[in-house]
Image 1: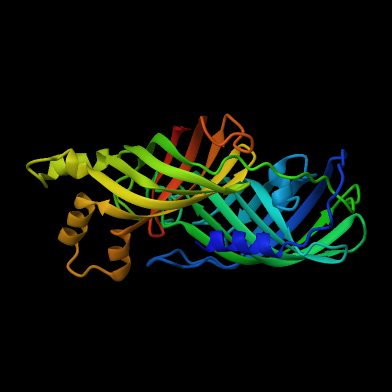
Image 2: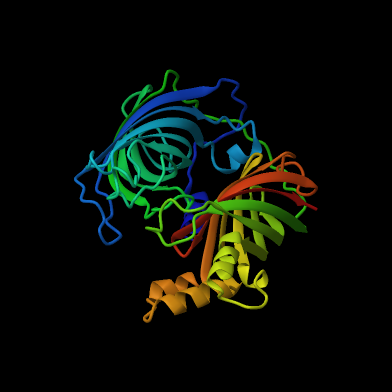
Length: 389
């Protein structure tokens, strides 16, 4: 919801240079950034840590408006970054290297100062995850490979036509999506400072044409996917079985401007981990397969970036019998946050369309990948495919 409000606010506030003509030159830049922050200790027995440092080098392209979505977002910057991280405890938390594809939106851009909202999702490699043999204190990261999600808000100053200095605040999140326990997750708010080099000065004017919005019809979408996770809470049991979760999704979508879809629908998940526990612990005598399902009603929003869609979905459980029974039978006093986890579930992810949704709004085949969470706790990582009729 916060990202949705930010996106709406940004589109209302962006004051780009007046774009009126085509620019055939591709403008690019190189940037280095230093991040300094402190990990949020969000769990009992969290490893002690000192100040964290991250160092980023990146290559970026400033879009020129030749694609309609670039014009709508006022000519954003797209790039790829390599990030090194040290988290203030070499012995337990270790270090990591991340690859972060990212997108930057510009607010009130002019020749002196401007604001930048930078966001990205990618993959990270940790050299010292949890290990039963030699690193049992690392309850934060349980696998070598994790997701990295990042968000930054910066103020930028043009020093001259080739150099830009910027500083701001950022937040990083690292998690393996409950694929391998423990997975408390690493949350790092920090300050940042960066220097950018542009070999060529940006043009005063960009290419613009009147956008063609596909028909604003209500469309039916179907999606099927599979996810994987270990059964347990954030810290264990460890070294367990990787259980598949099967997903079916039926939802309606409607385009309300050039680059935005709203969504409403229902999806079901079948947890093989629930079924295995039901059988081994004899939780239910009848309807064991049925009790292993959950059903969710959700609302969503999709931001289109050409053939790529960035999806945010929030939902409530309509059917969740096993988890409710499991929590109530294992805990005498259920905390408010755990009660909310039995009600709320959310998804964040990307979809790729094989047919350009900027030109056609129906008959589209797509593939996607998502992180599903209960409230803020990761449940599983999923991949799947779907079709828009």
